[in-house]
Length: 293
Image (cartoon, rainbow, N blue to C red; front, top):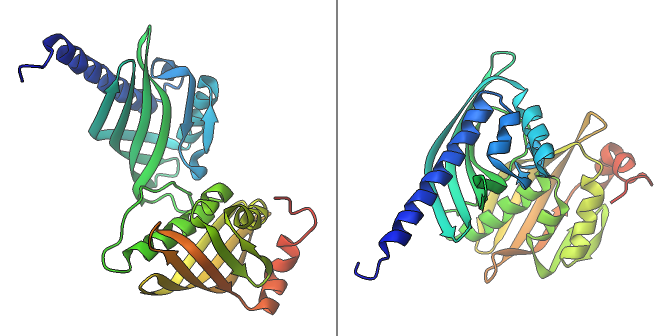
């Protein structure tokens, strides 16, 4: 304790208190639907990413205010409750990971609740601490069906934990319609095989396959019917659902997933569908010439 600088320690406490005030002010502004007042919370060059189902990446204060305004307009009332917050100070910048529970009363009277983490980068400005970047990750969602989220990673118990986690990351990436996130699930020499599509080797080629499919869709949901795992391999029975042009298309699929134990990434994925059924239900929709990547 003798080497602690009292002045520096006091300054750190003041910074943490000021950051806590900014985080609380965000909740107040949103719950009061004071969108203009968010200029006291964010920097002018701020960036946010609330996940693919809540606007995705947005840059610039005006755009962030507009996105939050649109999202909050869905609700008659909201309540944002902050929990524990871990702050790391680094001079005039800081990082904060803060738990939040947001309760919403929808316009039709229905209610939903989401449990999130705000992952913030903050910067000291002449006007005080402000949020420069915010990413939102979900842990538990009650209500709001059909909304795509970025999820906080969570391990799985037991010896099949690594393969289950790798498969879950892949499914989440597909459902978020993010080809880059899909590619990030694979090793550098990974193989992806699905009979209707040419085989793909490596993240870039796999990204191209999924970019072409996902770019056609307003929404994707892959429902897992049954699963089994053994060591570094998992077998999934799925019903893959795609919403294209406002219409839902569904196809039954069986997938075999092999995970590289060293990296925890997918080394091989083989999806099996009935080719005739696929062509009948999805071929004309996904294979049209205008299906751009």
